[in-house]
Every structure is written in C-alpha cells, then in structure tokens.
Amino acid sequence: MDSHVISFTSRLTIEQKGLDHLIAIARTLPEPWYINVAGTGVDKNRFLDLIQEAHVENKIILRGALQGRDLLDHYLKSSIFLMTSRWEGFSLVSAEAMSVGLPVVAFDIPALCEVTDNGRYALLAHDGDVEDFCRQLSKLISSVKLRRKYSALSLERAKAFSLETIVSEWKSIVDE
Image (tube, rainbow, N blue to C red):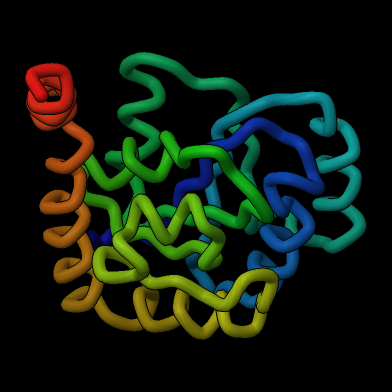
C-alpha cells in the first residue's frame, strides 16, 4: 500500500473501457503517482496517440498483455486498481484485483455495483463523472490508512467469488 503505482487491466478498446476517461484521470495525478496498464487490443495505437496528445506519457505506462506471474506482479506492485469502463458484463479484472487486496475505484455501472456490493467494498464514482472519479481516487492517494482499509475490504469481498463459494452456491441450487 506504499507504492505510488496504480494498476489498470483491460482490453484496449477506447469507448467500452473508458480509456479517454483514464487519460483525463492521469492528467490529475500528483507526482510521483502513475498508472501501469496491462492489456492490448484493437485501439492500442489510437490509445498511444491519445496518451501523447495529452502529454501523459509519464503518467500512463503501457505494459502490454500480461498473464500468469507477470499479471500477478502487475497487481502486487500497485496500491490501487482503477476501472473506467462504460459497460461490462462481469468485471473479472476487478475481482482479480480485489483477490490480492487492491482497493478499487470505478464508475458505478451495474457490473461494478455487483462486484463491489454497491460500493460497500470499493469507492464508486457516478457513471461517467470524471471529476467525481478523481475525488474518489484522491481519497486513496492521500491516505495510506484508507488504502489499507479498502485493501482489507477487497480481500473480504473476494471471498464471495472464490471457487469454493461458487461451487457451494451451485450445489445448493442443483440440490433444490
């Protein structure tokens, strides 16, 4: 929780994943904070162009597609996880980040409301409101104590998505 690294994991599709929002958020980050982006996708080159146009090359570092130990290290070397999607089915990457104890900041889209139990286990900003997102993120940036609180909440919430929990729930449904 002492690292000044923020993690972001996503397919690089600007509209759905809110990469334009991510760039706007990066502009507001205080030194020495920056965002490590794990992912690739059809909009990679356009995303790189937007990063250059916004002059945030030192705030958004594209790491490419990561998997296995590299992806785990991506999460473990950061103090906060961001999710800027405009829509999702289920946010697997948020659940992954929570499983290693990362505090999450996201927009209050339905998928993130589900993963975070309507913000009980994360900080949620009003959908599409970048200023509100920056306010929520700023709370975590400015307080190691708050990051530790939301880290513990993330670990607690991740239990709901564990294999054992899901198998148990399915078993009870099948048994009915």
